[in-house]
Amino acid sequence: MTKASNLPDRPQLRPVDVSRVTHEGNDFFLIKDPRNLSEQSLLVPAPLAAYLQNIDGTNTVEEIIKVALKSGAPQVPAGIIDDLLTRLDDMLLLSNGAYAADRERQLAEYRSAPVRKSALADKAYPGNADDLRGYLDGFAFPYMNAEREALAPSPGELRAVISPHIDFERGGDSYGMIWEHVRDQLHDVELFVVFGTDHNGDGPRLTLTNQSYQSPLGLLETDTELVDDIARILSTDDTVDDHPYADELNHAREHSIELASLWLHRTLGRSNARMLPILCGSMGRAMAEDAPSIDSHTQISNTIGLLREVATQRRTVFIAAADLAHVGPAFGDSDPIPTESDHRKRVRKDDEQLLEAIVRCDRHRFFDLIKSSVDRNRICGLAPIYMTLWASNATNGIWNGYQQCQADEAETSFVSIAGAALYE
Image (cartoon, rainbow, N blue to C red; front, top):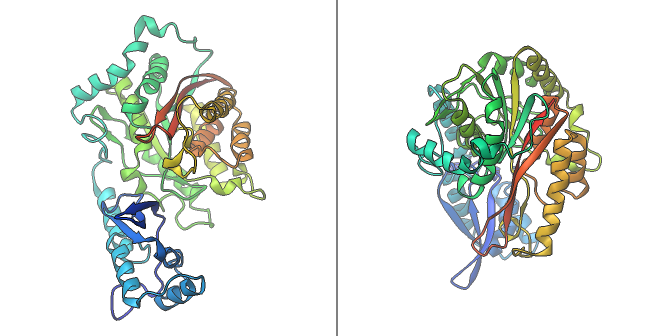
């Protein structure tokens, strides 16, 4: 640390959400914390972008300034850069600054709590059990009872469910359709393995937790013995420190498993079933042309092998909490995608190809379709769907409830979702 401040000698900026905005006639970059450790946001004048790019943990403050000037950035007083770094550190955005100590404190609080508390109760859905049950029933009602019989019949023993993880206000119909379709097939299940997208996790990585996910509708106890067995496998991965728990704090705020599991809790009520929540980090690195197959990752492959073995001993259903495409200006695309446009039809066609690969339980086809387009549609459910197809040993399935959900006020961006039930 420097003597003049608490800033690290070589500050390193954490991954951040950045958007370009205009304020009072001037261009700025709006910086937010994707993990929401700080609710603050920061406006950084656009000319300082070159300075931000060099806060990578390899440069001192003096070197950050020197490299930025060499790239053509305007010269600014060193005090402005020091102030910028201080503000970033106050927002816990420097990975080797105040964030490190605060993260340890929050992780200790999370682990010492009796359960993993609902992060979105009374925010994204009602926190009262009766109100929440009625809220979810409203989405499921069109597919209940006799009307559910109109859906495709179950072609075998249920092995897996693909569920959205978008908010219920936009995706409730898709949730209701797929969860009502499988509802009668869940009551004898002993173990639910829930793979969820880790929106802030690096990868390929599987992140565990011993905490049980609390819901206003109940609690499925996390199978801590199975967590320990998997942790022993993943901990032998020497490519990352503490593979099984390095990103465990992400469980505290990540919505993917929480939202999908609410429908599980609604279906089961009180149950002796156990749950295994696993967050899946990005598989983006596997998209590189010369990247090894995910299947060749020894520790992940061995984990999947263990889960397959467990599934032969206990009635197990795998769940992927996963959305599909994220397209339009809200996600970084330069061109708007209005409703009824050819672009939307193209995305739907791409999604339907993915869904056909899913219901054929062909994880390699599913992955190759995404890789061949360089993930142009930003399939954020890639990792959990891939792991679910791999682990479940399913052979066939059905999909339903496809939606393209508005993602900006101008209706030029959207998230696509669908549900699927997979059988053996």
